[in-house]
Length: 291
Image 1 (cartoon, one colour):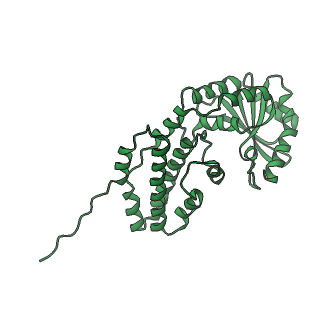
Image 2 (spheres, rainbow, N blue to C red):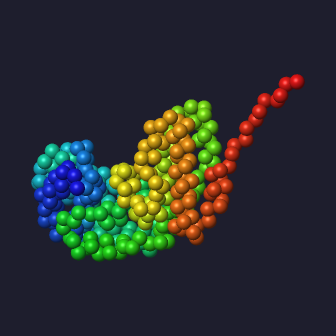
Image 3 (tube, helix red, strand yellow):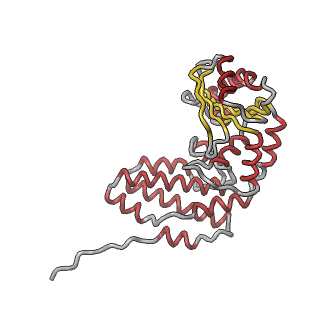
């Protein structure tokens, strides 16, 4: 754990009683970079509060005033807006406090582990990200409740792994990237590279039975993966740091190696249509030969 993470967790222990003194609070925990132990000098402190009944904005603002929280702001959180995201400063540290009702968290855990939820809100696998927060929580209060949810999350459901992989085996013909690299169409090439890398990560999170945590701290999550192409993160760096043609070739290799990993680890998934689509070539038209 980095010193920055330990410091943030210490701050959280000092701050939590301002909320847990309320009998309506069922649990509190640290999530995000501090809980993972990877915080750096730019990291916020991310705090979760679980309530028997979600408080009103006025109640949260009253707590903020009583405690003396600076630059306080509140907004609805989540696709269904069934939570609050509170932002403020505490001891000169920016804090993002997510407030959920316990019943909402319970339904989210059920959706993920029993209904194999792979839904997205933009790029975020919102429900899986929340259960990832739960799984890696540094518990400040309400340990029994959080441990109950954590127990439900283990083991990762095999059906969820299959659903994640099947959802993202929809790569387009990679020949389009090769053409963009040859044309040196840099903005579009790297925009597409980013999308392909995200899909690769989605596959690998499923293969590694990791609840999708989002797309931050990629190096950390790559290190947690036992199923991945060799030197995976180093090669991802080369995709974007090498010249356009070399980086594009490296990305193709990573995708093909990941397909091989799917075949080896989830043989029930039919890869044939995906490989055919991925390897399809765009037509080329040659000028007629003049006599």
